[in-house]
Image (tube, rainbow, N blue to C red; front, side):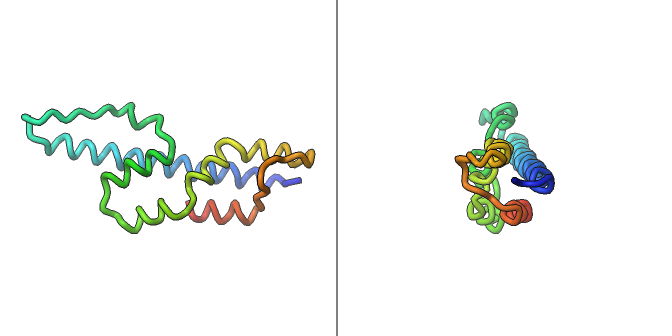
Amino acid sequence: MKDEKYISLVCDCLLAFQMLEEGLKISIIGSYEIIAKSTPEEIDFKFDYGSIDDLALKMLIKKYIAVTSNNELIQALKSKDLTKWRNFFAHNAFHHELMKRNSKSQYTEHSYEDLMLVRKNT
């Protein structure tokens, strides 16, 4: 059975992923605002802010890559299995913990150390 530290770390990781998603949204929206302000009036450039709000991490990363020249960050976003881990934390981590108490977990076990590494990388 996992302990309270595991559950607390799951919450920390969820918060880290939420902050990553919000940071990407801010960067994408800021880039589109710059594009909109620098586009000549003759060219119709419209941007729907709501189209960014509900995007999951994978799509946010794709949109961010389209508006940035920060190759180091692009490589980090692509190489860390971020979307896989984000989906585990968002959809399976608490269920995984509860099922593990009954030894019937259908999910791969993740140790406290695994989660610490994910939190550090996020």
